[in-house]
Image 1 (cartoon, rainbow, N blue to C red):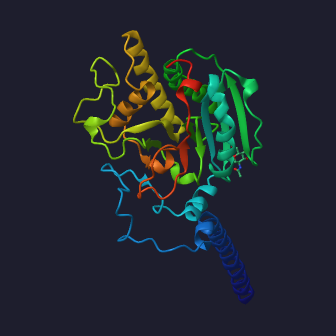
Image 2: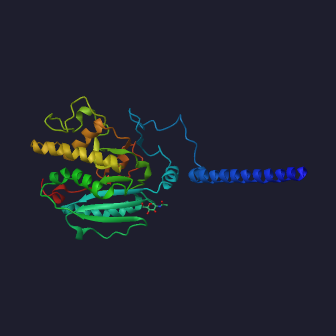
Length: 329
Ligand SMILES: *[C@@H]1O[C@H](CO)[C@@H](O)[C@H](O)[C@H]1NC(C)=O
């Protein structure tokens, strides 16, 4: 009787052990599968060992506040793609095409479909006074376009001044919780080379191609202290271009809202900053440093002579006849 009880106990504990073992094994294999799926893509990739000692020496690749400056040769496209592909991101992209500027849309969109954020979900938002003039461009898979009708103005300065407000309202009404990142880009431009997820960051600025070797006191910052965009001599990091503003939606919203409020104050005081929106943007970035900076590869000008530090031109302002496209001089 007692022997039977003992053998029962033995069988029971054996079953118990087996059960615990199964559960443990199940958990660990599930964990490995989970960890595998998390790091899988990057693990299967083979790429050159990053070197801590060698890098580009001809340009700065990090700012004094430790924000990366994106240049050809500072990132590995396949590796960065493997990381962002797992995040299922959406990138909203806004452009303003008012008056004669609609003529630039076709090249902008067609070249973006070749080079811009390839393989990612992109939603273009086109602000225009002529929705009927928006060209039909074949968009890739998971890419879409929305046209938003807005009134035009007979002064191009006025058009620039309202972009921040439009951006702010668009984010508030349609983009919060819908998209992850946003880029606001000038329309009189064209993509010539790869522009991918290496450009994503919390708040992203581009170096203006016209001033990247200019001493700060020669930057065309707003110098009148009556303006909200005022930057005194002796201050400033870089001269940023207004043609590219990007980042996480909530950070770009804060930027747009702040600049819009500063523009409103200037308007109430009847003062217009030297380069309108761009002046306010430069003021904003002086006190709210960008977390990533795009080199002039990401904003060039078709008319500009190429210097040896520019290894590739990715995005460039096209040649235009100002008299022909602007409503006023
Ligand atoms: C990725 O995001 C899109 C749009 O936000 C959504 O419709 C889709 O279900 C998501 N896919 C996965 C696998 O999460």
